[in-house]
Length: 93
Image 1: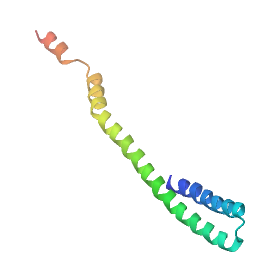
Image 2: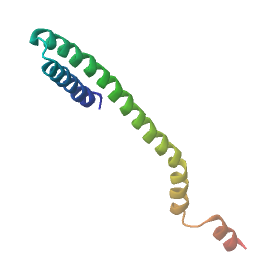
Image 3: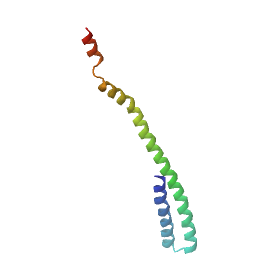
Protein backbone atom coordinates (compact mmCIF):
# COMPACT_ATOMS: atom_id res chain seq x y z
CA UNK A 1 0.00 0.00 0.00
CA UNK A 2 2.95 2.30 0.67
CA UNK A 3 4.25 1.91 -2.84
CA UNK A 4 0.83 2.74 -4.29
CA UNK A 5 0.56 5.93 -2.24
CA UNK A 6 4.11 6.90 -3.22
CA UNK A 7 3.30 6.27 -6.86
CA UNK A 8 0.26 8.51 -6.63
CA UNK A 9 1.41 11.41 -4.46
CA UNK A 10 4.81 11.91 -6.13
CA UNK A 11 3.54 12.47 -9.68
CA UNK A 12 0.66 14.63 -8.41
CA UNK A 13 3.17 16.88 -6.65
CA UNK A 14 5.34 17.00 -9.77
CA UNK A 15 2.39 17.94 -11.96
CA UNK A 16 1.20 20.57 -9.49
CA UNK A 17 4.60 22.28 -9.41
CA UNK A 18 4.86 22.25 -13.21
CA UNK A 19 1.30 23.60 -13.58
CA UNK A 20 1.99 26.33 -11.03
CA UNK A 21 5.13 27.33 -12.91
CA UNK A 22 3.31 27.45 -16.25
CA UNK A 23 0.56 29.57 -14.73
CA UNK A 24 3.08 31.95 -13.16
CA UNK A 25 5.25 32.14 -16.29
CA UNK A 26 8.44 31.00 -14.53
CA UNK A 27 11.58 29.45 -15.96
CA UNK A 28 11.47 25.81 -16.99
CA UNK A 29 14.88 24.87 -15.54
CA UNK A 30 14.14 25.98 -12.00
CA UNK A 31 10.62 24.56 -12.20
CA UNK A 32 11.90 21.10 -13.14
CA UNK A 33 14.37 21.10 -10.25
CA UNK A 34 11.66 22.07 -7.78
CA UNK A 35 9.25 19.56 -9.38
CA UNK A 36 11.81 16.74 -9.00
CA UNK A 37 12.37 17.64 -5.34
CA UNK A 38 8.60 17.68 -4.80
CA UNK A 39 8.31 14.33 -6.60
CA UNK A 40 10.80 12.63 -4.29
CA UNK A 41 9.57 14.35 -1.13
CA UNK A 42 5.92 13.51 -1.70
CA UNK A 43 6.80 9.98 -2.80
CA UNK A 44 8.56 9.47 0.54
CA UNK A 45 5.61 10.94 2.42
CA UNK A 46 3.20 8.74 0.44
CA UNK A 47 5.29 5.66 1.22
CA UNK A 48 5.24 6.42 4.95
CA UNK A 49 1.51 7.17 5.01
CA UNK A 50 0.70 4.05 2.98
CA UNK A 51 2.86 1.85 5.18
CA UNK A 52 1.25 3.19 8.35
CA UNK A 53 -2.22 2.71 6.86
CA UNK A 54 -1.44 -0.87 5.83
CA UNK A 55 -0.03 -1.73 9.25
CA UNK A 56 -3.09 -0.21 10.96
CA UNK A 57 -5.49 -2.21 8.79
CA UNK A 58 -3.59 -5.47 9.31
CA UNK A 59 -3.46 -4.98 13.09
CA UNK A 60 -7.19 -4.20 13.24
CA UNK A 61 -8.05 -7.32 11.27
CA UNK A 62 -5.76 -9.45 13.43
CA UNK A 63 -7.31 -8.05 16.61
CA UNK A 64 -10.79 -8.85 15.32
CA UNK A 65 -9.80 -12.39 14.40
CA UNK A 66 -8.07 -12.99 17.74
CA UNK A 67 -11.09 -11.65 19.61
CA UNK A 68 -13.52 -13.96 17.81
CA UNK A 69 -11.25 -17.03 17.79
CA UNK A 70 -11.92 -18.38 21.34
CA UNK A 71 -15.70 -18.11 20.97
CA UNK A 72 -15.53 -19.86 17.62
CA UNK A 73 -13.35 -22.64 19.05
CA UNK A 74 -15.74 -23.17 21.96
CA UNK A 75 -18.72 -23.33 19.61
CA UNK A 76 -16.92 -25.82 17.36
CA UNK A 77 -15.96 -28.03 20.31
CA UNK A 78 -19.52 -27.96 21.65
CA UNK A 79 -20.93 -28.88 18.24
CA UNK A 80 -18.47 -31.74 17.75
CA UNK A 81 -19.38 -33.50 21.02
CA UNK A 82 -21.94 -36.30 20.42
CA UNK A 83 -23.62 -35.71 23.78
CA UNK A 84 -23.86 -32.61 25.85
CA UNK A 85 -23.14 -32.73 29.57
CA UNK A 86 -26.83 -32.70 30.49
CA UNK A 87 -27.59 -35.57 28.11
CA UNK A 88 -24.88 -37.71 29.67
CA UNK A 89 -26.14 -37.03 33.20
CA UNK A 90 -29.75 -37.82 32.13
CA UNK A 91 -28.65 -41.18 30.68
CA UNK A 92 -26.73 -42.06 33.87
CA UNK A 93 -29.78 -41.52 36.04
